[in-house]
Image 1 (tube, helix red, strand yellow):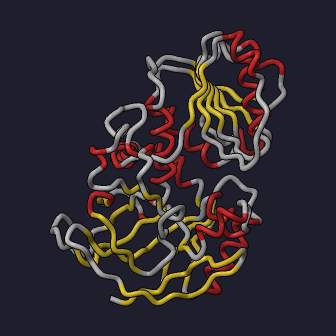
Image 2 (image 1 turned 45 degrees about the vertical axis):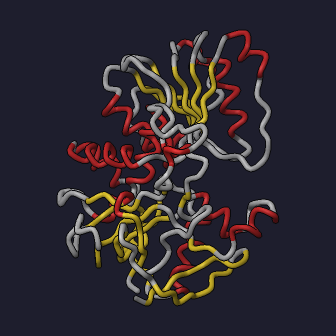
Length: 348
């Protein structure tokens, strides 16, 4: 089966590729229906990585947030026409033979497998017409979940992975630094699964942070946050500003507190290690998610208020009929400073 794909070949340049898609014995062919652009996709689009890294990445199809419909499944796990979400983290079949296997450690899991492939990072992403994909990395989307909202399942799964990164009792006071999409979704998830605790949102932009379904809001630098009894802090800022957020959380968090880092910074950021030692603070890194995180993410949509919260993130639905449309939506997302993102409807 022939498939069209858009590949980034150099900064701000996509080329159209025609590829022959062959379905393996443990794979299904999926027609991509909806997708969304991540900050990581924009970094590849702009060439905002070091030159050596980009040399290994280009040419590559971008996007790791996508859903589609089954066209062919040689395993018969799915029916033709089933809607599925694609899990971008692909673990090799023989992953249990790793020298230091982490896949079965609950707080780590397969998203930390050093041999894993990740779509739109070290493996082609979903910016294409058809994808041949392992059925183990496909999850059926329930009928009650709208397709354009299901695109957010990848980000939701990442926040679930962040929550399981540390052992919690369920009644802790948690503060989230960052007023972007990831921080917002984490807040929504915590309000459902950490319902006996208090959720605090800390951000730079009041118009964004006030949209979070949090119990309390603070702007970064507001000294009145010191009165809060914060046990857990999540950094969802990323970039060079992540250092400021991490240091503020170090200053405010309780002795023995835990800080979970989720933002990506391309450059080194300075943090107050002296105070980390003085207060006995633990820092944890979180990246990506697993199949089980996606499965848990889907269950959250059984709650109507959660679906309503997530649907607010849809700024508009943009039809992708050709490579020009694809290029234009990347430019739109570059200029987007609102709390939300554009959903790509593939019509190739």
